[in-house]
Image 1 (spheres, rainbow, N blue to C red):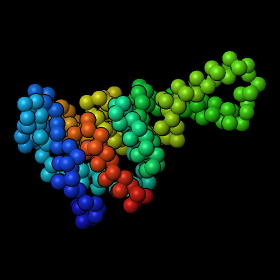
Image 2 (tube, rainbow, N blue to C red):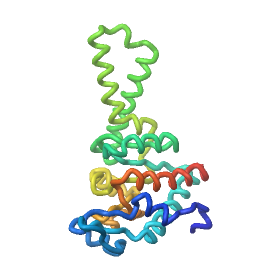
Image 3 (cartoon, rainbow, N blue to C red):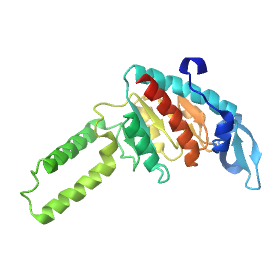
Length: 232
């Protein structure tokens, strides 16, 4: 698989970047035990087996490669404050739709209604750009501006999403439970970074890794970016 992809996954580099650090041993999900090799320090932090991380990351990258080659759509979701900017930057560079603020309920399960809100948002943007809002009072224009900012926060990352995505990439599985549930209901395959407090069997492509450290998330996203850039 590594030869086919020609993507280098360096275990020593992952260790330096903290990819291996899980949560406290008291927070472990029973199904994550096979991905853990030990406990470190007085805080009893679980250590993730980076050989497993490499194995499962390569499986996920192979799936992403196939998606990209088939011109399918991958939606990335990461709303934790610490990674919001990273998610946006990564998604924009790779040309992917993304959610990096609050997940709006129904984004997948009620996509028709969400699409209408996106279309309204785009129309409002057009009117602003072409000066069609100039005829309104200053107070009304300020209201439109506030509405645009709210719509940008909710839908800015998915405003070019015309249909349901073919797959979804979740950064923090335990946090993004609504996104996970909606993807499950719509039978959309899920790739996810799975820390020691989450269930790796609940997604099709789990990547056992630290989902709290920016350095860990960034390493994984850089590998995804390599694949996307190579096969797009």
